[in-house]
Length: 141
Image 1 (cartoon, helix red, strand yellow):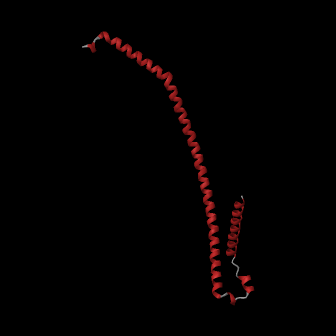
Image 2 (tube, one colour):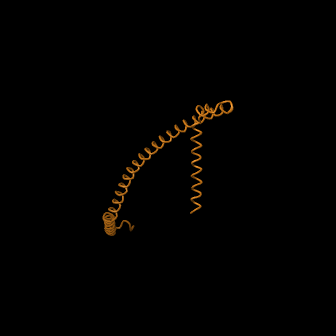
Image 3 (tube, rainbow, N blue to C red):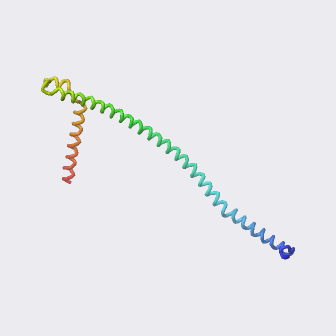
């Protein structure tokens, strides 16, 4: 049988070791340094990305906390203003129900002031005048 021929053993073993060793040194000198540098770079990028992400998460948490505090303060102010408007509305309704002609004008001016309605109407009037000024300014351009 030819596979057991002792004359060809040396030749096959020699070429096998020659190609294996040459392949090993080519990979060792050319490809492994490139591969190891790519792995080191990837590891450094991951570490830097994790540090940046943790800083970003902390900043995002701080921003969300500050925005929540701001929203809570706005809602508290809104709740106070709405309760004032409700109280003024109740006063106004009672005043209208009793009739304007039954009360003297000095009593009305001194005791029945509707601060919330007055500030709201003055703010609305200011907004309307600004809007009309802006429209006239745009038309002139």
